Length: 170
Image (cartoon, rainbow, N blue to C red):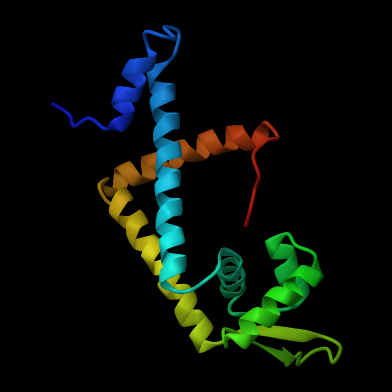
């Protein structure tokens, strides 16, 4: 017999109340929601473990995604923030030694933001904690199953994005 999870009991309780309920839709949605909550908890714990605020992690993450160097306006665009909001974030990260601002080599009026070794190590540490949990969870599937799950979730996500309520983020 296949092992049961919390969602199996949830679906069973609702079928008599809502007989038209598709147990596969309900089960999939509830499991996705619970996995999201679980991964958010792991992320929040990683942030606590590395003494990072979420906005600090997000800023370091976007900077790392640009090869460790970007302009404040590029970071503002990546984060969906006004440039003035990024300035405050960068001030705090610079005080902590996670980033440094340097004059641009291509434009005297511009400043570049660089990820320091300390900033990179802190970002990687927090990211690795979440990555290990993601690998542990999805690792119960073999390579073909992971590919299939990814493809199926892409189809679901495209339907959400096409409805106008989903967001595409980089």
